[in-house]
Length: 407
Image (cartoon, rainbow, N blue to C red; front, side):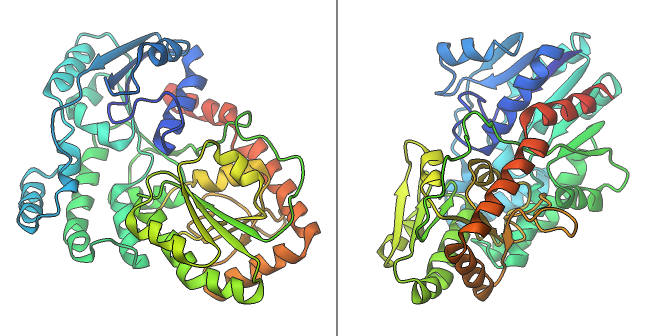
């Protein structure tokens, strides 16, 4: 098939800047040998000649467009401008966070290419790229949206978990987001999500939508299984520390749970590892035993040195790369329902692959079990790695994605 793949919001190489880049790159790497792919991207700082040359190992052509010279409206906290953005959203039906990225040049080019019969399908990697797909295109070609995460479900989940950064704003936005997601999803012949929970959110808006689940995986070569259990009492939480769900989780765990762990285990430590820590996260460094690292040369090496990986997310739907990477490396995981979403880790009749915790006392109990029981640590480590190898490797996920594209 001749595929036109839109990834304007993320240049997918190198796959080391976030979950969106990792997913897009690895799916392209898997389906590239099967199709003639034209990848449409913005000329960001990562779009160097070297990176473009490397990407062409898997795609036939790369079409570059200038980045729109517009400021992200989400960075402006002025109350009046926030009210104006809400009014704009109400009138246009599209979130300001999407419209500020819009390039008329890209929209015109994509429409002309499809109407000219040059492609068999248009694929949007990440829902934000939907703005370049006119509704009438689905009458000519297959249109696929790999949503990555439901924006409506994301905001709803934050509100329900009490993790919203701005509750009033998000409550006002929620019905508009539901309307927006329902409208844009209707443009596509096929929708792809990463977990059953994400499918549930989309299906509540569009009951008859063709929704397929293709999870996110782990590159087993860059996440090697660790050679030994380091023992000790070191905890680690990884993730981009400027993302709302990670900020909430880091603050919640460091302030509400970790002090309880230290009461029982005075030598316990907690490393908060991830790029771009916001001030609220940086302040956690003052808590005894807590270290905020910021960007590190290798997250894998940090994981390999840790006794337990905690994933104390209270919000944020979809599969969690941080959980997958921890399991791939062989670090025992204690996670919340959100942190373990999309993974069968404690199902009756299946091997135990992680410990689940949602309340402070549950975390303290589970962490204590792992600190004190090396055999349990090894059991979780082995079982989780086997699950990752069997179910969350990019080769098998790429095959699932290819089936969606050819169906």
